Amino acid sequence: MTAVPLIFGELNAEHYEDEFHAAHPEIDALRARMEVVEEPRYTRDYLDVDKRSIANAIQVFFRDGSSTDQVEVEYPIGHRRRRQEGVPVLEEKFRRHLATRFPVRRCERILSLCRDQAQLASTPVNRFVDLFVI
Image (cartoon, rainbow, N blue to C red):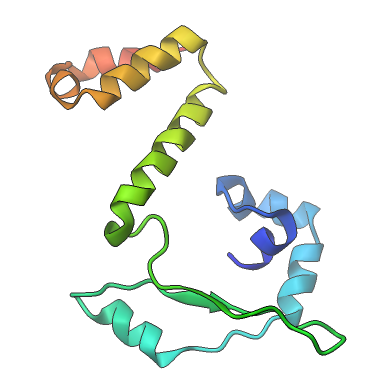
């Protein structure tokens, strides 16, 4: 979850596949150079039911002795404490992936229905699922 985005600039479902890793030996090469150190506060805050933090930090050290600043994220974008920020990101991801499978008009129908909570709740499941039939 760290080596792939450092190399490719993103992390998505494809990156978890064995075939992807087999095709990219640089992932394991970078992993071999990494050191993972537990931060006890992160573990405590993760187990704290009032926080449920999913904190992580990263710092990169280079051969010449220089380094990046340490970057820490207490609550990643998908965390419930960042729901307001996360929903637009999730909607954009949904829109992007719909566009890989359906024509524009179908995408708009699906998106419109999903945005209208009352209409979505009153739509029979079979009609909703029919929208996803190619």
